[in-house]
Length: 123
Picture 1: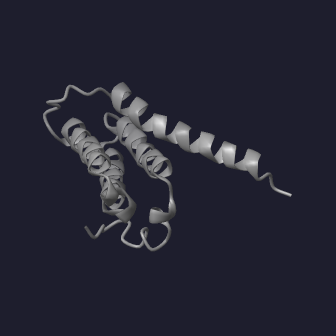
Picture 2: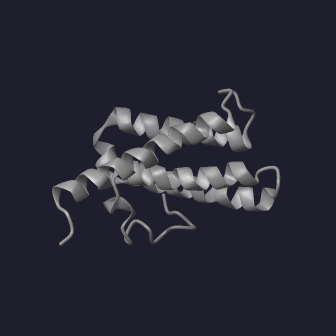
């Protein structure tokens, strides 16, 4: 899928990020969409579109194509996100459940960075 908003991100390093980092970044856009959905729907819509764009780049990442279960999880996360923010909420998601899901990846990315720094401290 060619992403209209972040079409150069794959070449610019999106596929260099870990899955945790990728989904943590998606979560940042999801958080923006959730925070703005009642206050300014235009801003929320933009964040939602960016989140979908990043999810599509993540789904296109060749590393994730090696695992059917990983692809299934990523596709389901995208489906739940669309269902909640643009659909009828058949999965009965909440702002909190979506935020918790994506925050877990941001926390995992931060812990991985911390572990890497402990193994190889800057000089």
